[in-house]
Length: 281
Image 1 (cartoon, rainbow, N blue to C red):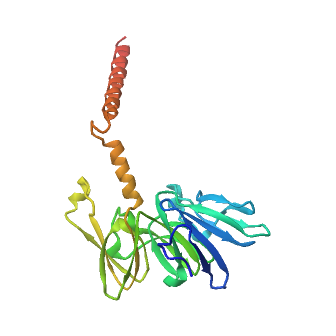
Image 2: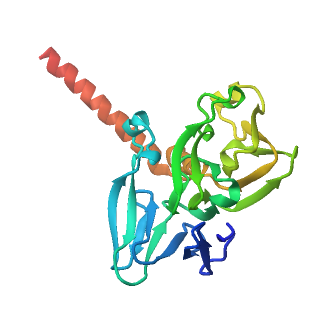
Image 3: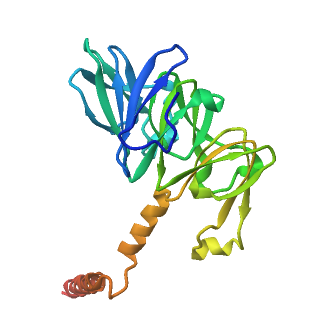
């Protein structure tokens, strides 16, 4: 059985596949975690490109195109990768590989066989997998769930009977919803949920709040039965706070910001005046 998502750092766990193959793994660290997976000869791990952190000498890595993992031509044109890396142990002895989270995120081990073989995740949640796991980007096409510009509805869909490792930011809470039980969650805080949960969208206030900014503008109303993983610090929210601190500081926090603006306008003025003088000449 796979580890619970709140697994203690450095505590080893084992995953037993439907074919009775046993794979030990550890989740290391508190934030920006690493999952270390032990591989027997000829066993392999499929991972997101650029996620490999370390590996033993017997592990060989290759970049491979996996059809079921493709995100589509349009997503590829806008920077999405349509390849994965395969890490295989080609040595005679057991080896190991460390797969790292690309940001301040926790690694959640998900045994898909325990979730009915299907799990819907936030964009780019997939980190790596063992055995039968397919990854597809999917959009929930139900009319009540389609909201233009809301990134949270472009989810990754994990299917299969293997073990998948996904990412979630901050602290993670698992909620088990009973039949008919309702839970309202900020849309960006949903890390993953089972396909049995019914999702409806609720706007908390007038649409004009979206123009002038407003947190918790869109709420997802979830109705059970099913399981949802809730993250306290979505990556895009974290990055937005950093961007605001860098691009919109006040004078006391970053006086160089206004000095840089003054220099920019001074140089622009010099260039314009110089071009006018040269034109007259």
